Length: 512
Image 1 (tube, rainbow, N blue to C red):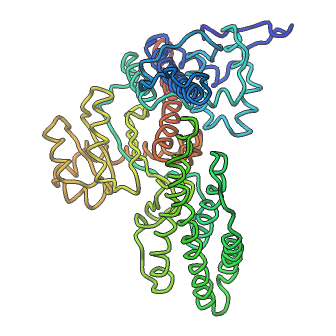
Image 2 (cartoon, rainbow, N blue to C red):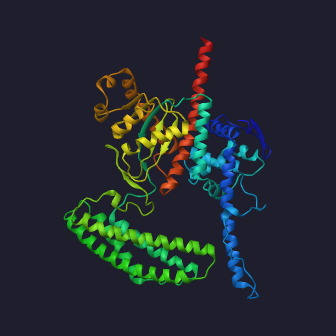
Image 3 (cartoon, rainbow, N blue to C red):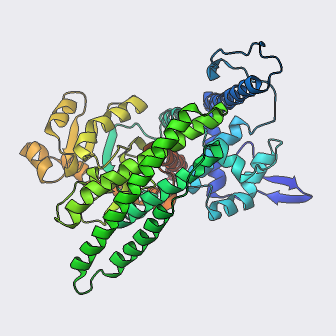
């Protein structure tokens, strides 16, 4: 690594940089921005945009203060709309450079997180990382600063990093991306397994708690002893429902508890709805700082969403519990912490509440495409978009495409076979029905089916080494960003591995 010296003097000690996988990882990250410095410009642009938004808020608050504190009533106060993009930034408090923001974003992808205690210890004790940072003439920033700034990096910038990474692979001829194997996997969301009783109780509790926070915006809030009592009763009923599972007359006892639970939830909802309507009327007239008004509107929106979800659960819960009707997972509230998480069931595997990303693997093991659809989208419906994303990023139409039966789509297969794809293999009975017997028995199609095991190796590696099987962030946009970070980290490590394999083959040739 050019920017990390083999030995460095730090606090009076000579510290050697260990030859580790992490050192090599940081090295290849640096190579990318050396070749494509536009990435740092994009990161810097993201930081500037955030700074402008913050400045806009400060200016709006200052104008509000001027209107309320001006000495002369006839004095003019600027009423022009403030546009963040048109604001200029002056020299102020030094911030972390775009280079370090990029590096820490890549570190987060490598570690899977920078909030966990394990990640904090790793970052604090990494000599390699410390020498890299202090080699730039700055001190190791605090974890809150790191987290705040890496979260500013936009999805557009991350996609550009992904694109640049693929260009690096093509430039070094580490892969030609003429082979594409597509598969999906289940990813566990940052949420607990849902039950109607707990969701009802937690939605009431969170809506009530959020209503109480409204007082920070100078709006009077009213405590409700009745809602607090209802919550206590609902919590007890939840425990009763859990404890009666598997016991004698469990169904009758559960139904009795649910009837009481729904009655309490309905009454609490009416009280909270009435209070929310009062708050909305007052909020429309309240005169507070613009930045506070934005926060107030956001909190009101969250309360409204909680009560809407509460009414949704109260609607389908009796059908499911008392009438034993099956409710589509798409029609249910599966999580109060991540509304975008869906019920994911793949084959005989344990179902999860989370997401089902689509991954495309190249011949040499690089991920060339990542699609994270909302909900439990059918694989066959994502096939065309996954292939198109591969082509847009690599600028290569794959000669071979391999998928499993879940992607069986005769129309899409026919389209791509006439659009440049030479072999389009779909394993399984559905795929066999779409393929002529001559094609199915050909060596090319047999090889393509046999090579599908490689994508299982990818799934194992990226899940166990990069924590791809579980996400910490919530909401579809945040989850997409987290999974993309992990894919980029995996690809950097794959670049190092393929380089190593190529060097080994070259040495074997020389030795021969």
